[in-house]
Length: 420
Image 1 (tube, rainbow, N blue to C red):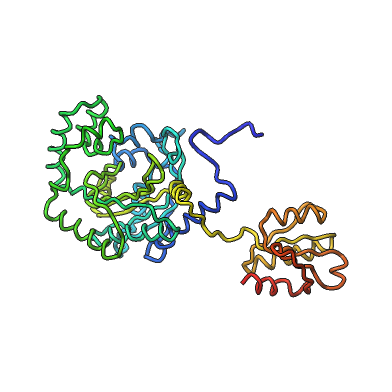
Image 2: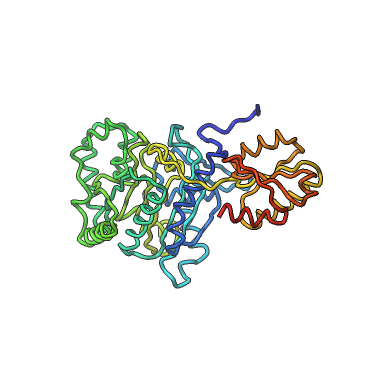
């Protein structure tokens, strides 16, 4: 037993479960790759100010959950708590928006960090796949991203998720609503922290999950009643495009996202089989974020889907992914000459795209065949001195138990034929 354990609120991904996580990441990324999104990878840490400005200084993420530290050189850095601010920073730094082809469409996959109270579905280290479309204001772009996320989830076999949709307005209409909401909230019985939030970002109070707060919000003014004509028209087009694509959604006038940068379209993917941590992903439009972090005006939209929670949603629905076999062929050499010959054949099988493994450590036949069984391989290739003297190996079907002698030089072709 090791002296060390994984830090509180984290966990290790190990085989065979890790194969499911890889498959989920691939499934989420697949529709993005065929829709013009290029892969981007950013550092695991950034300047603290990037998140303070972008995510919002009043958010729980920045005030309570961010892992911030000072380097030996005196720089204030933070482990990234979300992906959008980092991706936009990287796009601006590389001048991708000046290449003349807007929107800049990017996707990413990585680890994120928040100091939260650990519980099922909420970890201090978690994995997301995200997509951002930077530099264009177009309802079709918002609809595209929602449709692609829906496509990714359905390709995994998920069915019991819901898409919640709302509009948060823009700089023209939201200030009027903000003032009305503040007036309403000031009349409620709220704690001091929440009262401070009313003055900084009252929309965040609507996102408070405490039942005592939600009960008091029953009569709160709704943003949809304050949307300007431009925001109403924009939101209606998003709704029409999603509906025309056959994607079901629910209008949720109280939906706000936990980050300050969102404007207009906002959406969330929820799964009712996950208890309190029901959100499996979400996103929206963030037209002012580029200017917040020192860039030019670049209207943008994006989302992030949680890999961890998507796996939990699959488990809740009883969906088992069809994963490729980690090992299709397992070679069992008996003797030094067989080790040399079969090792070369295993290398050749791998070059031809067949998943193959080898019995290492000089085990006898009984021990090596136990390893072959544990590997999950469909076929075992067994050879000893007598077999090689005759120019053959024994090919054993691990499901039926049938064993056939085949020529040494026919191994690769035979297995390619059998495995398809």
